[in-house]
Amino acid sequence: MTEALLDPLPGLILLPLAWGIAAFLLGPGRGAAPAIVTLSLQFLFCLQLTHQVLADGPATHPVGGWGAPLGIDLMADGLATAMLLLTQAVALPLAVYARAYFRPGAPEARHFWPLFGLLLAGLNGLFLSADLFNVYVTLELVGLAAVGLVAMGGGAGQIAAALRYLFATLLGSGAYLLGVALIYGSYGSVSITTLEPLVAAHAPTLVGLAGGLMLLGLMLKTALFPFHFWLPPAHGGAAAPVSALLSALVVKASFYLILRLWLGPLAPLSALHPLLPWLPALLGTAAIFWGSWKAIRALRLKMMIAYSTVAQLGYLFLIFPLLGALGGLQAGIMQAFAHGLAKAAMFAAAGVLIKATGQDTIAGLAGAAQKLPLTLFAFGLAGVTLMGLPPSAGFLAKWQLIEAALGQDCWLIALVALAGGLLAAVYVFRVLRQAFLLTAPESSLQPVPRSLEWAAFALASASVLLGLRGVELMQLLHVGWAG
Image (cartoon, rainbow, N blue to C red; front, side, top):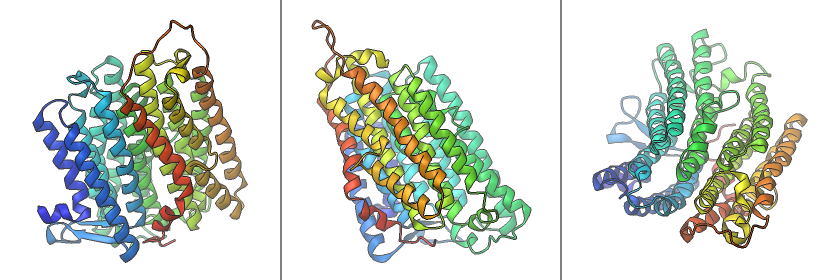
């Protein structure tokens, strides 16, 4: 057990499991301290793994000493390591935020810390899984923990949103598992590395059906338009730390799996028809325009941010016609980082504003800029990233996306990216304009802990500063990428 904890690969799975169980044993609402300490250690492990992967190439760990095909392998290449970095970088400041956000003894925080630990263990395990069935197990762990986090407030709206989310996640996981069963029946293996040389363009029809089912299930779990019906009520109705976790990390996990399958075992099938990669790109385009329109018209602050997530997820799927070159993959991963950090910051800032004003309407934000300047500055920085303005990571992501699109004569993708940035500016400035309106002198806002404001500011600042040091992150994607 000690050796496993010192190895970054199993350690990144066992550590959050350990503090999740410890939080459950300590009692309701008492897991904050072990969570923050252990998350700091997880972040150090992730940095160690990053250095190892950059120096020596992909890292593997046979669980229990038995590797594939008899046992289970954990594997981290550049893509998996990048997603692990994003997960720990978002989770640590959100843990600090959640500790101050939930009042001692608050009923909505009774099960937050154990579920948080299980969620992170599932996410880390998902990124490190090297076979399709273990991916399914971690998908279920992530989905059920996320549903529990949405429902933990106990309100009627939260329970309804959690049930809708549960239906979507079970349906998506079921479609994925059926695809895995069909692939196993065809090739007798679920190992990703074993399957890559076996699946060919002339694969049996069942394999094509399996790939379609798996991708469809994962698109549902990613909330890609038109499968986004569950996301706005779940993200918009949950507690602010939960909304930040779901928007920044959970939907990225299923997107990562789509990328892993598209570039890995299903690559020969996805190359069968030149128009096939345009299907996710067209759905992503629809997501950008529909999500932006709903965000512009939203009356509630968190619902506006939730619809913004629907829109921003669309950028991730614009890269599929561009994946023939590394630039397309780099644009997608940079967009995942930019959106993850910025959206976590935006939901965190929204949580501060709602606590201070006592309401979740954009109209109720008048005067917030004078009373909570740091929070509004954090919200504005996150908005800079979502709009794609320099020097943010969002700007770097859109620059890479447009450059890759123009390099492959995909003018439509470049135009959609530019239009999406303009639409994001409309709903971001709508909030900022309202917050800078003056209020009556006697009006007051409720005091909020300063750590809430600083956590939101740290995440927003990271989303901007990453645009200045994105080259180091992109170097990771060269490790193990076979494009």
